[in-house]
Every structure is written in structure tokens, then in C-alpha cells.
Image 1 (cartoon, helix red, strand yellow):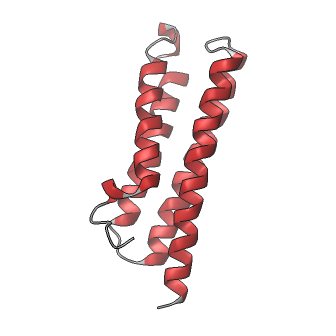
Image 2: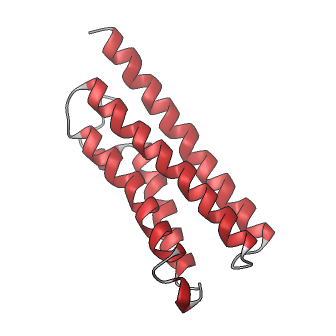
Amino acid sequence: MSDIKSFEDLGCWQKARELRNDVKNLINTFPDFEKYELVSQMRRASRSVTHNIAEGYGRFHYQENIQFCRISRGSLYELLDQFITALDESYISEEAYLKYKKQVNGCLAILNGYINYLKKAKSSN
């Protein structure tokens, strides 16, 4: 972790950014009447993931950083539920849903690893 100089260097932030950009492209294909419903919710949830990782990084205290990462994790689960809604509403195919689910799970794995790193670092201080 010594090569980390900014939140932008964090693997969890980088993967979440990719997901956020994929969500941006996906929601542009949704019906107009979803603009203030599912589209808005998915946009906010996907942005919340990266925003909270960045904010936690900037706190400089392990416990606060962990808490913001937990909020990010919650936003990833929220986004997964929104992908399920998109599937149920036939806005995406089963194949697309499985692709996004895999992407969310990848983000969760990296984020959980970062949270565990922060917990260990906190314990050793």
C-alpha cells in the first residue's frame, strides 16, 4: 500500500469507477419515464460507491475510513438490487444482469479486502 498516494490509486476505487461508467452507459438506454425513478437511483448509488471511498480515504483515521467504505459496500448492494429491478422490468437481459452482478461482486471483493487491510492497520497502531 506504500505506492498509494491518492484514493485514485486504490483498486477498489478504480473498479468502482469502471462500474459507475458502465452504469452511466446502461441507464442511457432505459425508457424516458424511468428518468426520475430507477435511472436516478442507479446513478446516485453508483456515484455513492466511489464518492464514499474517496471521502473515507480523505479522513486519515482508520475507523472513519472503514465506516465510509461500509457505506460504499451498502451502495454496491443497493445497485445490485437495482440491476435486479432492471431485469424484472425487462430493461436488461439475464445475460447482462449476470455480467453486472459479477462486476458488483468483484467490486465487493476488492472493497472487503481494503476494509480488512484498514482493520489490521488500525489494530497495529
